[in-house]
Amino acid sequence: MDRLASLGSRYEMIKPLGAGGFGEVYLVRHRLLDALRVVKIPKGDLEQNKVLRELFFREARAANELHHPNIAQLFEFDLLPDSTPYLVMEYVEGFDPKTLLEARPLERVPLLLEIAEQVLEALGYLHAKGLVHRDISPDNIIVATGPGVRPVAKLIDLGIVKRVESRVQATFQTRGAFLGKPLYASPEQLRS
Image (cartoon, rainbow, N blue to C red; front, side, top):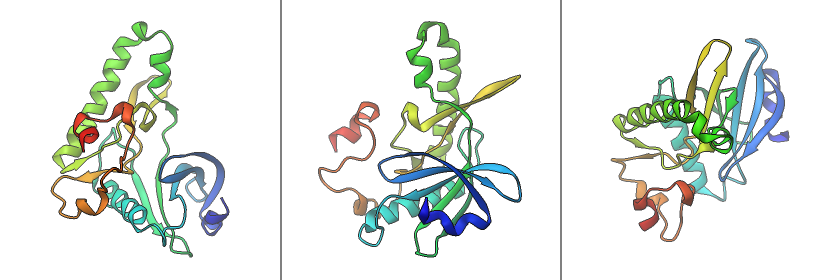
């Protein structure tokens, strides 16, 4: 969290939420709006890892184009004083669908189908924008809930999104390298 000290005038750091293959995620409170947000920064030294830096910038550019009720909203993208990029995104309070699968899945079929339909709507929206998510898994989906509110599934991570028509995609596809989670990967991802 020391890397985020410069954000202290605008955001109160609350706690780390986790870390993935490429980034670290923190829960923060916007001081003026009194609103919870998520700050994501890339892991490691980006000067040494140009591919990771470009993936992070690609995530920010993609998230900036997206305005869909089933995709977490991007609020801000900027650089810290040390040139580390960061994203400020919508905080979605809820649970991941894996929770439903582990506890009496047959009783949860209607809710699971509703979640799947919402995720498919988000993916259809991404595809219409020329983007492929490449990392759909239960831990990249949060189901927001609240009293009297219909559950809303949200995609929360665009870390390895790819533009279908991109000519620079070869830069990020190293033979033998795999991006995503093998358990949830499409056959064409596993073949390449």
